[in-house]
Image (spheres, rainbow, N blue to C red):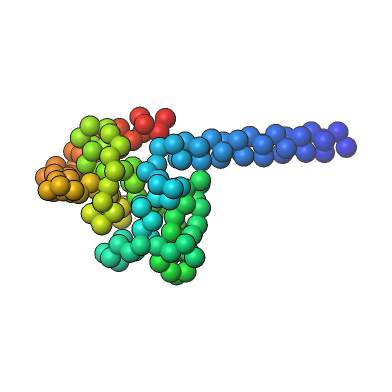
Length: 156
């Protein structure tokens, strides 16, 4: 019977530890991701980018993943996201990929300026005759490496 109580105590401690880690991860994501009113991608459906047509999501189709809320334009897209959220989440927390690579800065985006490379969604700033996707395309490989390093540093 003593072993049962030991095992039960270990399970209890493990569950609480895991819950604490998940809560810390959610807080880090909320702090570091590009959310407005708690929603990522300015309310655009992350799955819609993969059909090359970014579409605004609807409040009727929303889903919270690790503390970040997403909107979807259909139940089908919401279901796809639930199956593989990491596939559809934008790189660098939805911040401008070029700015993350060039300077390690969190810069807002134009949600309709994007690129998918190797199955990953990258979004970019595009305003006032400054489309950072053009600059990204000139040195994508190098900027992507630098952005990965900068993002890891930001999200430590």
